[in-house]
Image (cartoon, rainbow, N blue to C red; front, side, top):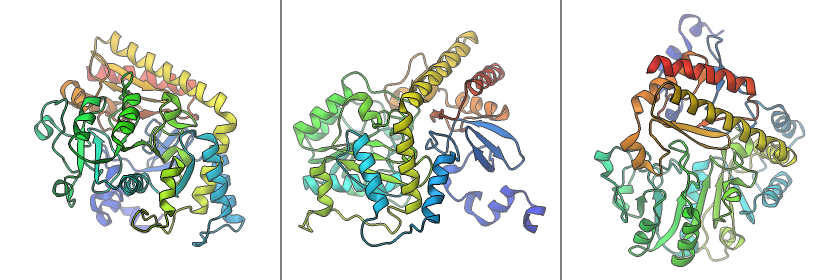
Length: 441
C-alpha cells in the first residue's frame, strides 16, 4: 500500500487532495463510505465490510456489478485490436445501432454519446432545430442532466417554489451556481401528472420540446396517472413540440424496449443511459428517423451540432452490445424474476410498516422501488414536500447501512434490485429493514 495510506485513512487522503474528499459531488453521502469492490449484488468498503447494494451506482447495474459476460466483451474489444479510430463509422457502432433499433420500438435511428447529460442536451437541441423554437418544458422533481437549462427545479422547498399551482408554472431554481437559466427564460417548470399546465404553457410560449422521465424516478418512484402519458402524446401532436422521454433511469430496467414499451406511448425522441451498458459509460439518443436525420441535415442552419471525442468508444460499445444481446436472449427469464423479487420486497416492507404502526407506503415499478412516510404514493413533487418525513427517511437508510444493507442515505432516492440479487438477499434485507424500523420508531 502507498506510504501515505499507511498513515491516513482513504477518506483522509481524499479530503486532502480532492475538494470535499470525492471526485464527483453527486457521490457525497453521510456517512462517508469508501467502497473498494463490487461484485454481483454486493459492495465491500475499505474496512472489508460487505453490503447488499440497492443503490447500484445510481441504478445502471441491472445485471449486477462486474457481470462477467459484459466485462469479457469489453476486454475482448481491446484485445482484438479495436480502438477509438476518431474517423468514420465503426463496425461495432453499426452492430449496436442495429441491435437497439431492432429491440426498442421507439427508436428508428440512433446516435451514441457518453453520458445521460450529453444525451438529454442533444435531445433538446434536436427539438429546437426541428421546430425552430426555443422554449422547453421540464418537470418539478425530475432530473434530466447537469447542463444549465435542465439542471433546475430538481428538489426544492415550498419556500423556494411556492404552493401547488394548476394550471401554471413555478419559479426556476437552478441546481447550483454558475448558470444563466434565470436570465434566459426559455425553461418552464411544471408538476408531473399535470396536463392542464402543459396546455397552459403551450398557449403562451412556442414550445420546442417537453422532456420528462416517463416514470419519475429521481424522487423515488412516481407513477404516471392513467391517461397522463397518452395526454402528453396528444398535446405534443396538437401544439407541435417534440415529446422526449428521458429513459436514462427507466430504460432497459423495466423492459428491453424501455418504459415506453411498457406504457405503450411512443415519444418523438428517447434518451437511454445507465443500464444500456450495465455501468459502462455509454448513452444514446434515438427516435423517429425524420427527427434524428436532422443531425445530418445539409442545411447547416437546421443541423444540430453533435460531437465528442469519446462518442462510440469501443469498450463501452462492446459492453452495451453484450448487454442488449444478453437481455434479448434472457428477457423472458430476467424480467419476470425482477418483478417477483420487486413484489416480494414491496409486500415485505409494506407489512413491516403496518406491523410497527407506521404510516407509510411503497411505490414500485418492477425492480425499482421507494418508500414514503405517506398514506399513499405521491403524484408529484408537491405531494412529497408536503407529506413526507425526510428526517426519518434518512435515519432509516443510515440504520440499514449499519446493518449491511446499502440504501443510499439520501431521502426519497429509489432503490434498485438487480438480476444478481437472490431471494435470500431479499429475505435478509427485510429482516434488517424490520430491525431498522424498530430502532427508528
